[in-house]
Image (tube, rainbow, N blue to C red; front, side, top):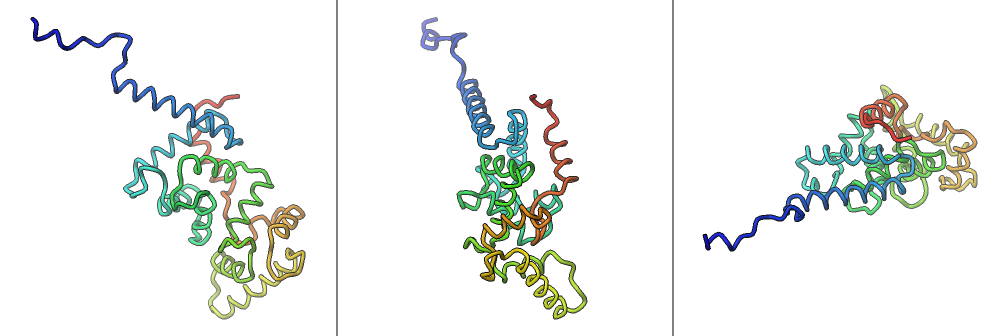
Length: 231
C-alpha cells in the first residue's frame, strides 16, 4: 500500500536511539575509568570500575537534592559512619571537605574515587597531607592550639567533671605542642606536622581518627572489589 511507503524499516546497521545512548554511556564510563585509573593511582582499572558502580548505587538510593551529581554532606557522613565506624562529627565534616576538592558541597564520582585512593591506600606522604588538611579546621594552613583542643575534646572519653576534663586536655595540648611545634610559634605548620610524623608515625592521627582502621578498610575492599582483580 502507498500509505506504508513513508516509513522505512530500520536498517540493521543503524542502532536505535536507545542503543546509541547506551553505547555513548558505556564509552563515557570507559573514558572516566581510564582517567581515574591514572589520577587515583592506587587502584587498578577493575577496582576503579567497582568504586564507580558503588558510587552510582549509593547515589541512586539517596533522596538528596544532590543525588543527580553526587554525595551531599549527610550521605557522606552516613557512609563514613556505617562503613568505617567514624563517629566524630567535626572530623567527619573535615573529611568531607578534604574529599570535596572544588568546594561545591557535593562529592562527585571523581572526588569519591580519588579521595578513597588516599583514604584507603595512600602513601605516608599522602596521608600526612590528608590528615593535616582534616585537622586544619579553618583552612588557614595551621593547626592552632584552639583547634587541637576542640578535636582532642571531641575524641577523648569524657571525664566526670567538665572542668577537670578541660584542664587535662589543655595539658595534653601543651605536651603535643612541645613535641611537634618545631619552630616554637605556638601552632603547627604543615612542615612541623610532616617532620614530626615522619620521625614518629604514631603521631599521624594525633588529634583523632580520620583514617579507616585495618579491619574496616579490609572489609570495605573485600566487599567492594569482589570482581577478579587485574594483575
